[in-house]
Image (cartoon, rainbow, N blue to C red; front, side, top):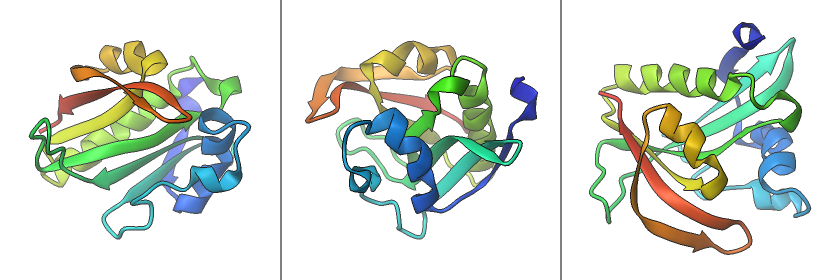
Length: 149
């Protein structure tokens, strides 16, 4: 099933259709807007199956001062609709973007990952750095990173 996903750039607002039910369930749709969504260096990708948007991820040019992650992009708002989780779509989406960022000479991809997502990202070669921290109304997170170039 995983080989049927098509990945293409989308707008920040298009991400809401997946961000909302997966990452912001029960909260206002406005909570799907992330700081940096509309900066010109931010890239949003959608994964489509039969023209239905089922996965999203946003990538923002952003260093991490505390952990000295430079020449880096930050992954934010990654989500796969619950019905499609566990089929490899998130992995396909991340692999696609890692290749794209590497071609642009970007060295590091990092994110603040929800505790529940740590095993997924570890399988893809990301490493935890630092301690757990709380993002209000969302929960415990860890910073993770991966060298891509």
